[in-house]
Image 1 (cartoon, rainbow over the protein chains, first blue to last red):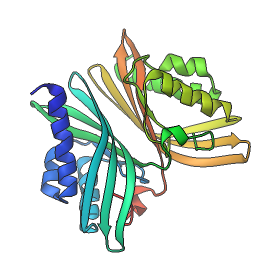
Image 2: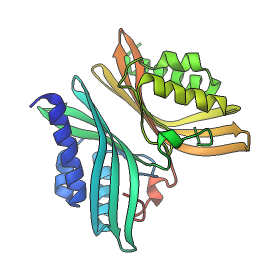
Image 3: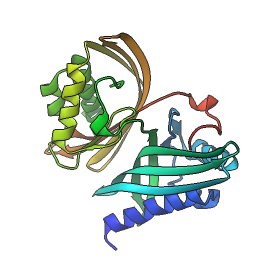
Image 4: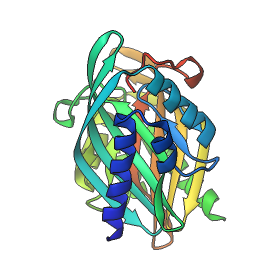
Length: 139
Length: 139
């Protein structure tokens, strides 16, 4: 398997753990390191393996079901790091009903002992496709 | 200068170009490559040097003044890639008045010919600090 394919497999395993609400699988896809980081949509930063896993536990405990479709997946590899950029099309079953959302994500992976492990996840809510994005946005 | 310091200097140059609304300086901090990518807060993905620079031009043309404070800057370097995670505290002068916002950012840099150049910027609006972030959020 070439490295890009290995990175895409690691990325797919992350979303499978997410969709399965499987904390053990989620722990297995992340590097257990103090510098791993996670930004959930609308949240500020979580740093460290423990706080990041605590956040997944809270999210999984409050989610009845979740379905992902991943779109526009772009992966690049440079040495022992790789980053994957994609759009998450999400349907979430919550106590209040089904929520649908678009999330733009950046995932960074590090090769550690021959395995690609997640070290950074940044997801952000999408309100405008770029073609409609105008000067009224924050940046 | 050690590599982490060089990355932080490149990151500072990016925000200086942004604050100065200086397109030439902005072009100089990015790698001119088809795989560079940018996610402005609330937007979906822009890919390629041209589209990314077009977005800065539009943003600069519609911004009268902008002031950044950068907080919680964390930088890591692995080989020829580095990533910087930080909070942007932004005051923007727009035609409608001053807008204040918090943006969580992930910036990825690549070492190219001895220089650290930006290859990915992902900024996202922050609504909740993690301590208040609860299960009601999208993820």
